[in-house]
Image: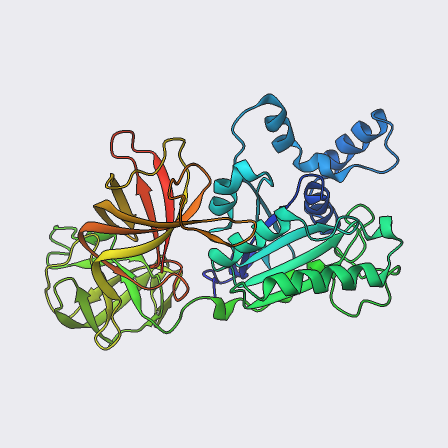
Amino acid sequence: MNSFSKNGYLDMELLRFTTAGSVDDGKSTLIGRLLYDSKSIFEDQYEAIRLTSERRGEEHVNLALLTDGLKAEREQGITIDVAYRYFATPRRKFIIADTPGHIQYTRNMVTGASTANLAIILVDARKGVVEQTRRHAFIASLLGIPHVVICINKMDLVDYDETVFETIKKDFQSFASKLKVQDIQFIPISALNGDNVVKKSENMKWYGGPSLMYLLETIHIGSDLNLVDCRFPVQLVIRPQNDKFHDYRAYAGRIAGGIFKPGDKVMVLPSGFTSTIQSIEGPDGPVEEAFAPMSVSMRLEDEIDISRGDMISRENNVPQVSQDVDVMICWMNTRKLQLNGKYGVRHTTRDARCVVKKIHYKIDVNTLHRIQDDTEIGMNDIGRVSIRTTQPLFFDKYQLNRNTGSVIFVDESTHETVGAGMII
């Protein structure tokens, strides 16, 4: 569904995935193995890490060194951010968001995972499901990531024992029954030796499922987008105002949901005026249909007063319109969230201001319990709040549409992003 060009790599579907796990669960080694076995690194890069591994006296080529820039940052005490890596196979393009595992980097995981189609959560076969595993699974569920793959790593250190795999799988499934995740899959792997990473393992013939790479290449993500509810937040009004395009007026933006076609009847919010789509243009010219996440410009048959922040939808299927919104917020700033505090709000292409009217509860991300008596929300905390905005927002619940269901909170004095919210 993300195909925009007529040929080559650009025409392939894009899968965004995030990796999460406790420290030393083998995330760096797994990403290094995926890049190496899919032939996505250069020979000189491989030679450099081979020589480094040899110098250190390590038995294997340490593929974790491919992603060790992040570890060096951590050792220097610099703020750790999400590291993005790109690679492609003949079937698909990939963007990996490598997110830190520590509790103090919850906000970074939220940032990296917010646009992901899939989350890989690593579990050490010797340790099983730990606190970090549960936290990462909860955040994946909160962020509405449609597919979760539990990679039970270091199977070589438990003699590739099937009972170890099955015990961890059952343990996780009993916890996951409380979460809203549509699709959970389990793969036993050894990132160090490459078992079930790109190729099927000879050491685990009892496992009948796919390798991780085959799953990443073939998992169906076309239906992850909301193609039912038509949503087009207007980003820019195009008025060339020259003799050649004297009366030209188009509305540019990125489609946030649904499928639009020329001839469709549409409604514009907040005015409520209706019109018909005259034409739709993409980067390469006119298109017969446009769907998320395409960037297009749209012309309507009637002249309506439309500006940035307005939304075009179907007449009989409009988003919710309200100034009172309930949000699950992940706080990202060292200064705590203030009750009755005023913040800037960014929602799709609309900028507004808001007041925090109520802090309902904080969530213990390890147990999923609501903490009703502690409503202080500090950095990396997640809680439920009610806000009132200065102008109406046009939104859907986050679980229905991640584009129209998310908001960003901004400190108006420093212009820092201080929180990310999921509308409930």
